[in-house]
Amino acid sequence: MAEYTLKYINHRARYDAMEFIRECEQQYHDQVLYAAEQIAQSSVQKPIVLINGPSSSGKTTTNDRIARALEAHGIHAEMISMDDYYRTVGTYDIPPDPENGVPDLESPDCMNLPLLSQHLSQLAAGEEIELPRFDFATRSSVTGGRTLRLDPDEVVLIEGIHSFNPVIMGDLAHTATGIYLSVSSAVVPEEGPRLEPYMLRFLRRAMRDSLFRNSPVADTLRQWNSVRRGERLYIAPYRGQANLTVDTFLPYELCILMQHLTPQLRCYSEELAAADLAPLSGVLGQVAPIDYADFMPEESVLHEFVG
Image (tube, rainbow, N blue to C red; front, side, top):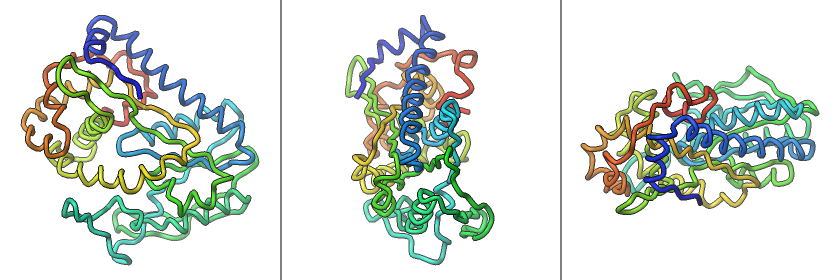
């Protein structure tokens, strides 16, 4: 795990912002290129690429970036959305989250994982499949529509928190490459406890939810313990299935996220503590803002959270 001091981040933000952003983005980009190279080298034997990671680890953007990087190797990447394998609401009972008193929407029981496993095995065998589609308006799985068969110069990429689940990975151990994405860095303030990776991911999620999902910080806080429970139960036990790992953290992002979130987080010190996020209260007002608009590249993973 990498560690960055807040003193270092603030200094670079104040006096060397353009180069700071460039270096952070290049470090992430190099990891993406390496992952694409490894996938390309084994694409004939392993045409399935499973991308996993906890909430706000940048799965959607990194999935797209890897696909584009594969084009340089002459490999086309087809995409499958794990969201399309949600089960029709009303055809099953959503499991409870007894720890937090809410439905467990993170549970793999909400998805048709056996069907997904079957489809991926068929693709690896060169067969054609008919993909389902989940209609979020009616909360139902719809059959018919897109079909897919992999050509020799193609792989399929699928991202989601259950992609390493044994129901899927158990049948694909020899035909799939697993990539684990997360924030694997921590930030150390001059005083007080460090900001752990899951705290940095919370900032990403709070920013994204407030900007794009009509969900204020208070709602994200209320959901956070349940999200973390889902990560402990459904992601962490299978992390060892990964062949490759990518740390998606960009150290300069703290200067952007805290600049926008600090006024709201000041109102929720008790809620932050209840969600095991108290160290964030300790750095409010201590993170230097950064002028990033002219320097952040269009393909940055951070656009997934700040637009």
